[in-house]
Image 1 (tube, rainbow, N blue to C red):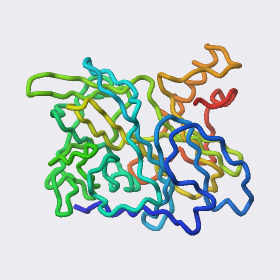
Image 2 (cartoon, rainbow, N blue to C red):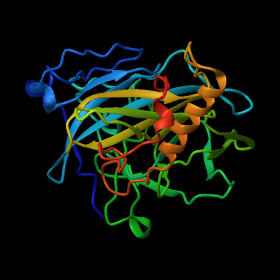
Image 3 (cartoon, helix red, strand yellow):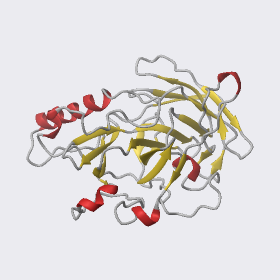
Image 4 (spheres, helix red, strand yellow):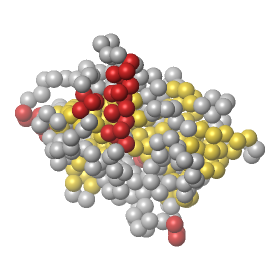
Amino acid sequence: MIKNLLFLFCIVSILAACARTEPVTGAKTPNSAQTADDKCCAKIVNYTQHPGVLLTATIAGKDYYSYVAKLTFDILPNGELKRAEQQEETFGAEEEVADRYACTFKGAEFNQNTAWYPYTGFFVTGGKLLAVKDRASKPMKLRKMTRLDRGEVMTQGAEARKSEYSYAPCVGKVRVESGLRLDSFFPTGGSMHFVVNKRQRLNISLPKPMEPFLLLRYHSGALIPTPMRPVLFSINLTEKKLVVQYQSTIERKEPIRSIEARAINPEGEKDEDETEERYQQRTKAFLDDLWSCPIPTTPGEACASAKRIPNPLMFQATAGK
């Protein structure tokens, strides 16, 4: 059993000039003033309505970008989710935090600044998570995470992997005693099944389509969509709030000019100069491309490569916003 040893940091003196690392919550215009000397690092541009932050990491001697985004939803009485007006914030890349494991209105800094998770964790207050099911309604294995000395939790004992990854057990400001995790990531089309007040059943699925992703603009000219993975659900069934943390970890082996945070969601709209048919075609091309990417079992998205040839139907009009 190995605790989470991934170390995430921001190289302030080197990267501050060429990578904006503070959270951004609205659409931004890319800064095109970039010289050849700026190939050291990528600019981050957030085209979504969700807070996000780009950080750098070194894992086993390799350098990575790690982009984290949070999506906050109101839970309606029937279990449907509606995008919350107040989104849970991310910690800034240079924000000083006295206790990485403390539960705050932003959750725990430790969870955001872990460079990579190989699965999805769940923390619940005000009820109990009974099951997670895939898109075919087949139950997925849930493993319990219990407390360690420093206050974080992870799977221990016979069910633990050789390398386990830990979380701070926070639902916003609320600290819970334990959590659950899957063996992989929460799947597209999956569902979560809860009991509230010991008798009321509540089933929750993410809105469809809901696919945050990164658009990587390489210095070579390649334009590569790259998936984000849901690594953490924090569910407050008393306050009817759900926060899902998405993350994408990208090896820095090819120079990237900019990293654009984008999302395909039910609120998406077609461009002014495209037909509804073309919009649907383009959206499907993006989804098919992202869903074809292999699920990572080690740090780094395999699809994050300038050598990859994505579906050209995605780029015959402006990329999905």
